[in-house]
Amino acid sequence: MSGNPLFLGYTADRRVVHDRHFSHMHCSKEDAMAAIQKVRPTEWFNKFEVEFDDRSGWSECVETTQDDTIVMRHREGRDGFTRFVKNRKPVKTNILTILLLRSIDTGGWVLISAFWGKSEIEPWDRKAFIKDPRGAFQAMEASKRFWNNHALILKEE
Image (cartoon, rainbow, N blue to C red):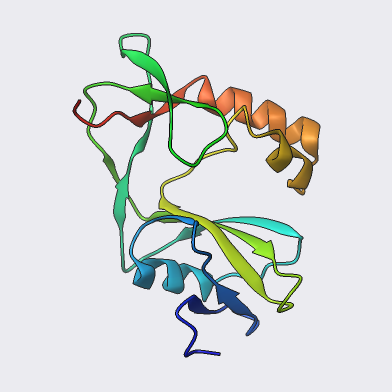
């Protein structure tokens, strides 16, 4: 299977993980693979915040204040609007978040997303709330709390 171009690696319990053509990987493949090797997914949908001692990256999701300029924009490949902040810089972090979904075809896992920093499900993503192991209500409340105080950095226009 390692010859498959979508093959990423194995979890800590030796389950295969594949990328998908339209995943949201916002880090290097090597960083995603290093995080995958540290996790043991158990749920149908899994979110892991993997902390590293030996690597770091830049988070494009930052905490916002009342002094920030916030705009809502539609991102390509997304079904809803995302909260963005203007005139901010990425912040250094050693936490890489990965989202894995169980593969019915392989019995392993599929990478949904990988990015530096922490985040919650975006408020418009109702399907993700249903999949969340915390339960839909708890996931929705966590989403609201997070996205009321965080935003993605808007690139120069």
